[in-house]
Image (cartoon, rainbow, N blue to C red):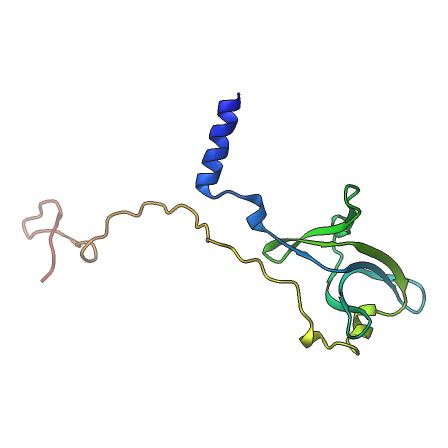
Length: 169
């Protein structure tokens, strides 16, 4: 059994299979789950907002945000170290963001929009894109051998015999 596990491990290493290289992981200082309600108190949307501490401003500044499309996107507590992490599929990438702190808010204003007054969206440090060491292409299917030109037309000879393949000149 041990030999089989070792062999599988070596094969996985040779093939370059590593689950960590497929996850864009990063740290922020605070994760906020915001539940936004309209003026009549109706729930409009939920969002997760990621903040970094800005010492020169003495406050947290929005780094990025994502709409919650699935409850599985909500941050989960890691009971071993007390941190929180959110894991979800961002377009074309599995993303994991961790923070030491998390808060939850219920508001009738959008905190991310308010934060644009302090730091415009264009000046934010967004979540980094995943850097893949190598691209894995699907295996190529063998192609039929190429011909020098188009297939030769079938031409019947004048005697009424069966058609034969000849090249027109």
